[in-house]
Image 1 (cartoon, rainbow, N blue to C red):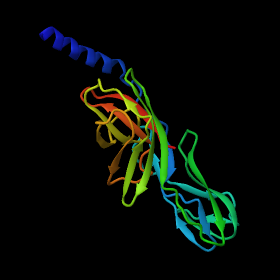
Image 2: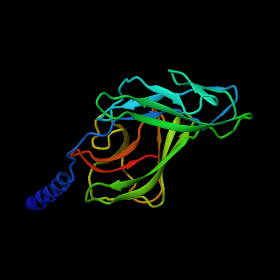
Image 3: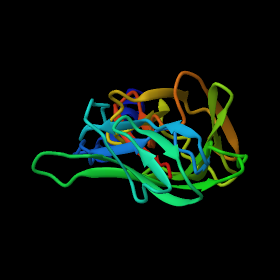
Image 4: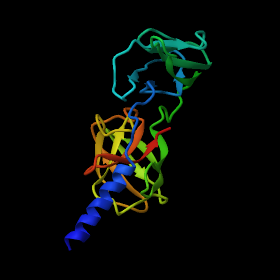
Length: 225
Protein backbone atom coordinates (compact mmCIF):
# COMPACT_ATOMS: atom_id res chain seq x y z
CA UNK A 1 0.00 0.00 0.00
CA UNK A 2 2.84 2.38 0.87
CA UNK A 3 4.44 1.63 -2.49
CA UNK A 4 1.21 2.51 -4.34
CA UNK A 5 0.83 5.81 -2.49
CA UNK A 6 4.49 6.68 -3.01
CA UNK A 7 4.23 5.85 -6.71
CA UNK A 8 1.18 8.12 -7.12
CA UNK A 9 2.95 11.02 -5.40
CA UNK A 10 6.10 10.47 -7.43
CA UNK A 11 4.07 10.39 -10.66
CA UNK A 12 2.28 13.66 -9.79
CA UNK A 13 5.52 15.42 -8.81
CA UNK A 14 7.45 14.21 -11.85
CA UNK A 15 4.60 15.27 -14.14
CA UNK A 16 4.57 18.77 -12.69
CA UNK A 17 8.34 19.10 -12.61
CA UNK A 18 8.54 18.01 -16.22
CA UNK A 19 6.25 20.87 -17.20
CA UNK A 20 7.97 23.56 -15.14
CA UNK A 21 8.74 26.93 -16.71
CA UNK A 22 12.37 27.91 -17.21
CA UNK A 23 11.91 31.51 -18.36
CA UNK A 24 9.74 33.86 -16.32
CA UNK A 25 10.18 37.14 -18.17
CA UNK A 26 7.75 38.76 -20.60
CA UNK A 27 8.07 41.67 -23.05
CA UNK A 28 7.50 45.14 -21.64
CA UNK A 29 4.11 46.47 -22.68
CA UNK A 30 1.86 49.50 -22.53
CA UNK A 31 -1.92 49.26 -22.73
CA UNK A 32 -4.63 51.91 -23.01
CA UNK A 33 -6.92 51.03 -20.11
CA UNK A 34 -10.10 52.89 -20.97
CA UNK A 35 -10.39 53.00 -24.77
CA UNK A 36 -13.34 54.44 -26.64
CA UNK A 37 -13.90 53.98 -30.37
CA UNK A 38 -15.97 57.10 -30.99
CA UNK A 39 -16.37 60.68 -29.78
CA UNK A 40 -18.77 63.49 -30.57
CA UNK A 41 -17.43 66.77 -31.96
CA UNK A 42 -16.62 69.08 -29.06
CA UNK A 43 -16.39 66.28 -26.46
CA UNK A 44 -13.32 65.14 -24.53
CA UNK A 45 -12.14 61.85 -23.09
CA UNK A 46 -9.41 61.28 -20.50
CA UNK A 47 -7.39 58.28 -21.66
CA UNK A 48 -5.26 56.31 -19.24
CA UNK A 49 -2.42 53.89 -19.93
CA UNK A 50 -0.59 51.24 -17.93
CA UNK A 51 3.02 50.09 -18.39
CA UNK A 52 4.17 46.63 -17.27
CA UNK A 53 7.84 45.70 -17.01
CA UNK A 54 9.60 42.48 -18.05
CA UNK A 55 8.21 40.52 -15.11
CA UNK A 56 4.65 41.72 -15.66
CA UNK A 57 4.56 44.25 -12.81
CA UNK A 58 2.97 47.67 -13.19
CA UNK A 59 5.66 50.34 -13.23
CA UNK A 60 5.49 54.12 -13.42
CA UNK A 61 6.78 55.37 -16.77
CA UNK A 62 6.36 58.56 -18.77
CA UNK A 63 3.68 57.94 -21.43
CA UNK A 64 3.90 59.92 -24.67
CA UNK A 65 0.50 60.54 -26.26
CA UNK A 66 0.03 61.42 -29.92
CA UNK A 67 -2.70 61.75 -32.56
CA UNK A 68 -2.30 60.74 -36.20
CA UNK A 69 -4.49 63.68 -37.22
CA UNK A 70 -4.60 66.65 -34.86
CA UNK A 71 -7.21 68.41 -37.01
CA UNK A 72 -9.64 65.62 -36.04
CA UNK A 73 -8.53 64.83 -32.46
CA UNK A 74 -5.91 66.42 -30.26
CA UNK A 75 -4.41 64.71 -27.22
CA UNK A 76 -2.30 66.38 -24.54
CA UNK A 77 0.55 65.05 -22.40
CA UNK A 78 -1.87 63.61 -19.85
CA UNK A 79 -3.93 61.65 -22.38
CA UNK A 80 -6.83 64.09 -22.52
CA UNK A 81 -8.31 63.88 -26.03
CA UNK A 82 -10.51 66.54 -27.62
CA UNK A 83 -12.66 65.85 -30.68
CA UNK A 84 -12.48 68.79 -33.10
CA UNK A 85 -14.00 67.67 -36.39
CA UNK A 86 -15.62 64.70 -38.10
CA UNK A 87 -13.26 61.98 -39.25
CA UNK A 88 -10.93 59.30 -37.92
CA UNK A 89 -7.62 59.41 -36.07
CA UNK A 90 -5.32 56.93 -34.35
CA UNK A 91 -4.33 57.78 -30.80
CA UNK A 92 -1.08 56.23 -29.56
CA UNK A 93 0.37 55.77 -26.08
CA UNK A 94 4.12 55.14 -26.22
CA UNK A 95 6.81 54.46 -23.62
CA UNK A 96 10.47 54.94 -24.51
CA UNK A 97 12.88 52.39 -23.09
CA UNK A 98 16.58 53.18 -22.87
CA UNK A 99 18.59 50.98 -25.22
CA UNK A 100 15.48 49.13 -26.39
CA UNK A 101 12.72 49.58 -28.93
CA UNK A 102 9.79 51.63 -27.56
CA UNK A 103 6.51 49.93 -26.71
CA UNK A 104 3.12 51.32 -27.64
CA UNK A 105 -0.61 50.77 -27.85
CA UNK A 106 -2.94 52.48 -30.33
CA UNK A 107 -6.66 52.79 -31.04
CA UNK A 108 -8.71 54.25 -33.85
CA UNK A 109 -11.32 56.80 -32.79
CA UNK A 110 -14.15 57.99 -35.03
CA UNK A 111 -15.45 61.53 -34.51
CA UNK A 112 -19.00 62.31 -35.54
CA UNK A 113 -21.54 65.10 -35.01
CA UNK A 114 -24.01 62.80 -33.27
CA UNK A 115 -23.34 60.66 -30.22
CA UNK A 116 -22.77 56.97 -30.93
CA UNK A 117 -24.19 54.42 -28.46
CA UNK A 118 -22.47 51.22 -27.38
CA UNK A 119 -19.19 52.93 -26.57
CA UNK A 120 -16.74 52.00 -25.10
CA UNK A 121 -16.03 48.34 -25.78
CA UNK A 122 -16.66 46.28 -22.65
CA UNK A 123 -15.51 42.84 -23.74
CA UNK A 124 -12.28 40.91 -24.37
CA UNK A 125 -11.79 37.34 -25.54
CA UNK A 126 -9.19 34.64 -26.06
CA UNK A 127 -8.46 30.92 -25.96
CA UNK A 128 -6.69 28.87 -23.30
CA UNK A 129 -4.06 26.29 -24.21
CA UNK A 130 -2.08 23.70 -22.35
CA UNK A 131 1.65 24.28 -21.83
CA UNK A 132 2.02 20.91 -20.11
CA UNK A 133 1.11 17.26 -20.60
CA UNK A 134 -2.33 17.90 -19.07
CA UNK A 135 -5.49 18.57 -21.09
CA UNK A 136 -6.54 22.23 -21.15
CA UNK A 137 -8.41 23.96 -23.99
CA UNK A 138 -11.34 26.23 -24.79
CA UNK A 139 -12.35 29.79 -25.62
CA UNK A 140 -13.34 32.48 -23.14
CA UNK A 141 -14.77 35.99 -22.89
CA UNK A 142 -14.11 38.61 -20.25
CA UNK A 143 -16.81 41.28 -20.04
CA UNK A 144 -17.76 44.22 -17.85
CA UNK A 145 -20.91 43.78 -15.76
CA UNK A 146 -21.54 46.77 -13.53
CA UNK A 147 -18.65 47.13 -11.10
CA UNK A 148 -17.56 43.53 -11.66
CA UNK A 149 -16.10 41.61 -14.56
CA UNK A 150 -17.39 38.21 -15.66
CA UNK A 151 -15.16 35.48 -17.08
CA UNK A 152 -17.19 33.12 -19.28
CA UNK A 153 -15.98 29.87 -20.84
CA UNK A 154 -17.64 28.37 -23.91
CA UNK A 155 -18.91 24.81 -24.43
CA UNK A 156 -15.55 23.79 -25.92
CA UNK A 157 -13.78 24.15 -22.56
CA UNK A 158 -12.04 21.04 -21.24
CA UNK A 159 -9.47 20.55 -18.47
CA UNK A 160 -7.77 17.54 -16.94
CA UNK A 161 -9.26 16.18 -13.71
CA UNK A 162 -6.08 14.28 -12.80
CA UNK A 163 -4.07 17.25 -11.53
CA UNK A 164 -4.60 18.19 -7.85
CA UNK A 165 -4.90 21.82 -6.81
CA UNK A 166 -5.48 23.49 -10.19
CA UNK A 167 -6.16 27.24 -9.89
CA UNK A 168 -6.93 29.98 -12.42
CA UNK A 169 -5.48 33.50 -12.23
CA UNK A 170 -5.47 36.84 -14.02
CA UNK A 171 -1.93 38.01 -14.70
CA UNK A 172 0.40 40.10 -16.82
CA UNK A 173 3.13 37.47 -16.63
CA UNK A 174 1.88 34.02 -17.71
CA UNK A 175 5.04 32.30 -16.45
CA UNK A 176 4.45 32.76 -12.73
CA UNK A 177 1.67 33.17 -10.19
CA UNK A 178 3.64 35.90 -8.39
CA UNK A 179 1.71 39.20 -8.41
CA UNK A 180 -1.21 37.45 -10.17
CA UNK A 181 -4.86 37.87 -9.15
CA UNK A 182 -6.27 34.56 -7.95
CA UNK A 183 -9.75 33.88 -9.34
CA UNK A 184 -10.16 30.56 -7.59
CA UNK A 185 -9.75 26.82 -7.63
CA UNK A 186 -10.84 25.03 -10.81
CA UNK A 187 -13.96 23.00 -10.03
CA UNK A 188 -15.49 22.72 -13.52
CA UNK A 189 -13.57 20.55 -15.97
CA UNK A 190 -15.86 20.46 -19.00
CA UNK A 191 -18.41 22.72 -20.67
CA UNK A 192 -19.63 26.28 -20.29
CA UNK A 193 -19.23 28.01 -16.92
CA UNK A 194 -18.35 31.44 -15.53
CA UNK A 195 -16.68 33.37 -12.71
CA UNK A 196 -17.77 36.75 -11.33
CA UNK A 197 -14.73 38.79 -10.31
CA UNK A 198 -14.68 41.90 -8.11
CA UNK A 199 -11.92 44.39 -7.47
CA UNK A 200 -10.21 44.41 -10.88
CA UNK A 201 -10.77 46.25 -14.15
CA UNK A 202 -11.43 44.79 -17.58
CA UNK A 203 -8.03 45.91 -18.88
CA UNK A 204 -5.92 45.37 -15.76
CA UNK A 205 -4.58 42.00 -16.93
CA UNK A 206 -3.68 40.48 -20.29
CA UNK A 207 -3.54 36.73 -19.58
CA UNK A 208 -5.33 33.87 -17.89
CA UNK A 209 -3.00 31.50 -16.06
CA UNK A 210 -3.65 27.92 -14.95
CA UNK A 211 -1.37 26.93 -12.10
CA UNK A 212 -0.72 23.69 -10.21
CA UNK A 213 -0.72 25.22 -6.74
CA UNK A 214 0.62 22.29 -4.64
CA UNK A 215 3.72 22.02 -6.84
CA UNK A 216 3.89 25.68 -7.94
CA UNK A 217 4.11 25.04 -11.69
CA UNK A 218 2.28 26.24 -14.77
CA UNK A 219 -0.27 24.10 -16.60
CA UNK A 220 -1.56 26.48 -19.29
CA UNK A 221 -2.45 30.04 -20.25
CA UNK A 222 -4.60 32.21 -22.52
CA UNK A 223 -3.89 35.67 -23.92
CA UNK A 224 -6.74 38.18 -24.13
CA UNK A 225 -7.32 40.14 -27.32
